[in-house]
Length: 193
Ligand SMILES: Cc1cc2nc3c(=O)[nH]c(=O)nc-3n(C[C@H](O)[C@H](O)[C@H](O)COP(=O)(O)OP(=O)(O)OC[C@H]3O[C@@H](n4cnc5c(N)ncnc54)[C@H](O)[C@@H]3O)c2cc1C
Image (cartoon, rainbow, N blue to C red; front, side):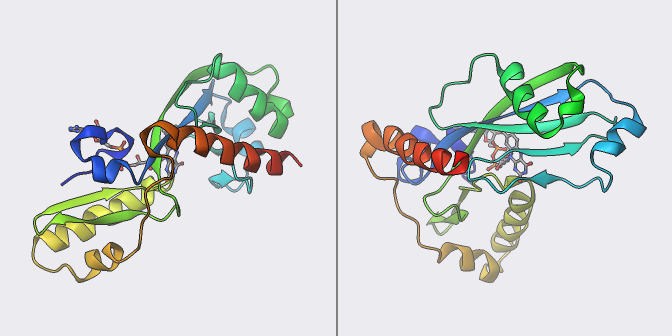
């Protein structure tokens, strides 16, 4: 099973060419108390906005606000992480101006050209799962289930995913990331306009 996400690199170069690692970052506020947290998101929904480079947020069980976004296509962690995400959070929730940020962290996810997940086999008994493109929490669970089915002998559902066509990111090892950064700059501009 190969499921190294954005970190697969030299382990499987043919797979690595089809994905790009993208950083995404998140903060957790201090506990707000149940009533205040509920007033922010009464339905307790997990929200993602409709921008191309999107922000996402939800309440935590201990009544903090979790707020993520600030995707980085350059592979460099943004400076003053907590501050820069808090700024985005305050645009949506200005009432949190005085609230402390207790935690800030981030990590890499891998995207494919089409943003569709990339499952398949390199050989009969070598399975790979990658390219969840930001939707890994639900999809990775499904992928694990389908792979277990395939290993146990019923590959019908797994192999449906194997039929999705996937392309290498253009630009080769040197220009792959800069060309993605340029394309994303265009989409970021569209979000702003
Ligand atoms: C801050 C943040 C917020 C996110 N929010 C959401 C969200 O709200 N909803 C959502 O659906 N998705 C979200 N995602 C995306 C989601 O986390 C990923 O899509 C998902 O984790 C991908 O799952 P994975 O199993 O492919 O990779 P990972 O969870 O990254 O697992 C890959 C594993 O492979 C291991 N590995 C790598 N290389 C090797 C090697 N050579 N040998 C052995 N092991 C290796 C790594 O240690 C790691 O354990 C978020 C991601 C981040 C970073």
